Length: 168
Image 1: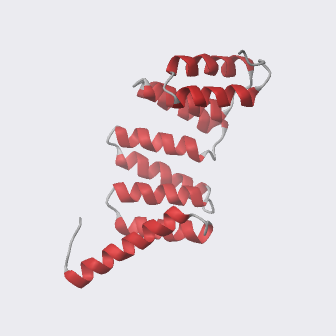
Image 2: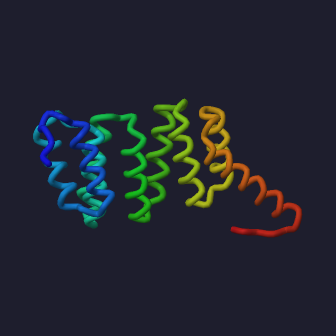
C-alpha cells in the first residue's frame, strides 16, 4: 500500500519500521521519498546515518549526522551518533571534546549530561561519570537509568573501600 507523498510522519514511521525489521533497501526507498519530497530535517538525516552505519558506511553516517547537527544543533540523537562514530574510530578524545562542547552550549540538558556520564564510564573516568550522573539526576530526576547507575557506582565504591576490592 503506497503512502500519500504529503505525509511526512507516515513515511518516517514506515522508514523506521523497515529499518528495525532489517529491510535496508526498503528503508532507503523511504529515505529517498523523505529527502526529495520534504524540506531537509535532522530526523531524516539521523535515519540516513543509521542506514549508512548498518551498511558499514561510517563515512556516510558521519556526513549525515553532521548534516543533522547543522539542521538542529541541539539534537541529542545526532550528538550520540557522532560520539558512537568517534568511539568506533577509537577517538575518545574527539568524543569527549564533542560532548563537553555541547555541555557548554546546553548546560541544563539532562540528556546531554547522561550521554556524558556514559562516555565517561566507557573512558574509565569514574569521577566524571559520577559527577555527570549527579547532574543528570538534578536536571531530570525521573531518569531512572541515571539513578540506578549512580547507585551501582556508589555500591562498587563502598565495596572497594570496605574490602580493598578493585574492579578497574
